Image: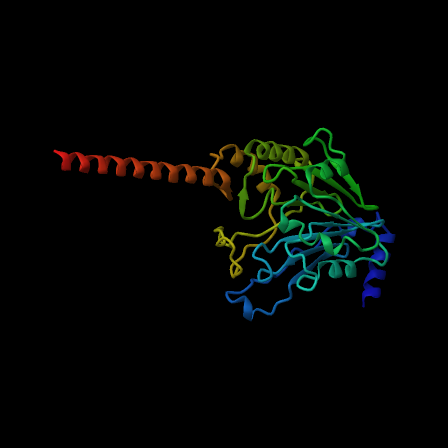
Length: 323
């Protein structure tokens, strides 16, 4: 079966670019596992694979394997393939990511592994690919990102990764994390946004960088077709609410795709961010470090007030006894 699938992909790619017009569209009608309230009684596979079209695959780690349930994306070109992110689970026995990805590739096709950013839930699976033949894993640290895509100066410019009759544009989008990049596939008009833009909590590390990234992304995509924006996670319910933090059960999860209109609305929402927490339209923005800092200051103020009260209380009692 694997040989038949690989042959079909090879034949399809052999007729590119004519075939590209036929394969640009695809299906986003995926039913993702909802996890479980009791993961010990949950028997879903640890990794789901959805075939968008013959050369594009969406993979997701099951909620009961990791509450992060990250998405990964496999894009197959004529000369090589691209895997965006490697998920949150390192153990190949618990999460057979490399085995699954290589089975989807035409025999012998080189694979390039990249990351949307350096957070562990997007790169934990890297070791599964480290010793495989014909596989290159790009480093996740900021220097490796700058060097590989030749971003000078960072975070300006747009890089290209040529897969062979399939060009992927790479756009710096820091703000959630300093290493964040997003990917635009000219073949399918899909925009892979990682945690920069997702149906869930936008965790803001650097607000000014985030606004600048949103503006750059809008400028880059405003005149381009965007079939869908596909992110690194889903944290929202179908009615627009947020799933409980670290929940491994999403019985009413919204669909993965976001739209170009969502991206166009992002700069204005970020511009109004107060540095701590804000809900604006579809967006929930949080800077947890700032919240923790303020909370810590508040605790210190309470402790200082309590100490002041106790000192003055005992001083008054002492004066009363001496009077």
